[in-house]
Image (tube, rainbow over all chains, first blue to last red; front, side, top):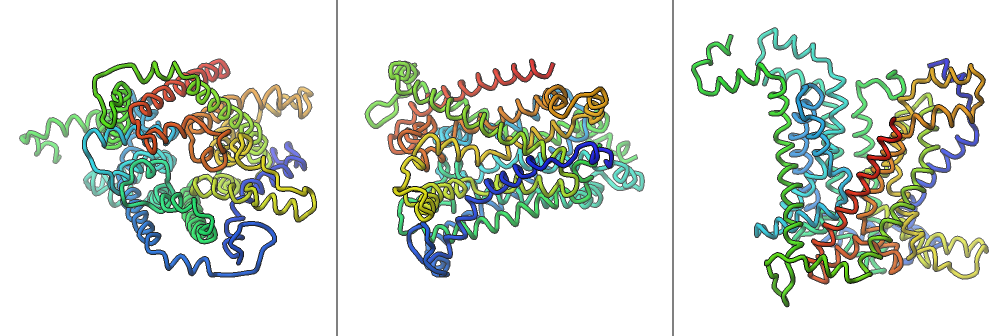
Length: 271
Length: 299
């Protein structure tokens, strides 16, 4: 390592650029919390004084709270079920040599690049053809399709990095494969599983494309926000709501990304 | 030992097969996820294809297969123009984003030595949070009486609000670039990180300066990552409709908005299905082109 540090001398302009890039990435988002505390109804400078009224207003809104609980339910079901499916899949991909694996993996990862619009519309046509009524269940189905590739890619590095000798020791001592999995494999990879749960929860909670096409009369929280964007007088309350969602999402994803690296070699020292 | 005891049971054949062949075990573990994806992707895509051959008869749907939706699309130049515009907007946004993200990824790969993971988290964090809220933030920033305009007027830089900031193709490009930055940074970073540093040292020993070293060693070796970044960002942006709907205005409308309208207010599902099939084919072709470029570059 040390050699490279001397070899690549610090590059001042590049460092400045990186700083500017980070500002560009975060600045627009930071206006949301800033204006959520602004007393004026219109989102413009100069600021008109500090208030918490917009946050208090959130508690007056019955439909908002229902939408919130809808989203929480969907996200909880989706994160659990996609993690349950992703753990064996990631194990299979990480460990077993099998013919056709590459094709199967590319297929499973397809929703990462397929536009949400196309998937949403396609699911809508098939559900409609089968006569299934749109509800939170159909939203959850759509979210599972989106979350599964992410879940697998969060878990995969853990299972690739996991040494099998512990499992072999457990098997040698007479544990059945199931108990070995429950008592050795799963606990050892718990940070990855937790990271996966948090990540998929956040993705589902914030997801819009699928919910747009697949939700029936019960909206999820992003759908509620979308429907309220038409009314300029509701803007400040939406800013307050968005602030809360952003803070929660950032915390969960940050925890997930941190957890995902627990016990793994830090990036850049893996050579 | 237990396997011997189990030989009398019918399930034993299967279980012995599983123990012997690791490929079988792998497929069995992969099966639940794969089945879900097969059912939830292939089946719906097929159903879209079937629906695209139906037609609208007054308020009811006529299920006799025709290619009417497709020929109607060929007859109206609006569709071609809209698809063309989506491709152009997505291409510009992708090129801009990849160009802006390359130095960033380069910085993290070569100049960050401590807290590398933290930098990566910092750069990808916004990507994982609500897409809708990020676009909403831009609407707040770029609006006619929004943050940027009122700030510019307050500072005395302009007298009138600049209408061009919101509801234009430029706004769409800017917001797309902001939203998908993480998708572009990661593949480029990975390919830069993989480069064997001794190649660069060898070039330095042989007298190449910083610039020549970059263009002759680092850049060519990172091209697979650039191509991947291009692909990863281009495909989802072609199909986007939130960004154009929120900051695009009539000028920034993309094919996704029309598909959404056909399934929504226009209530012409067969035509919408046909349009999304055309869009899929367009994206597929673009994807094949990227793959071909990737192969050429990888050589």
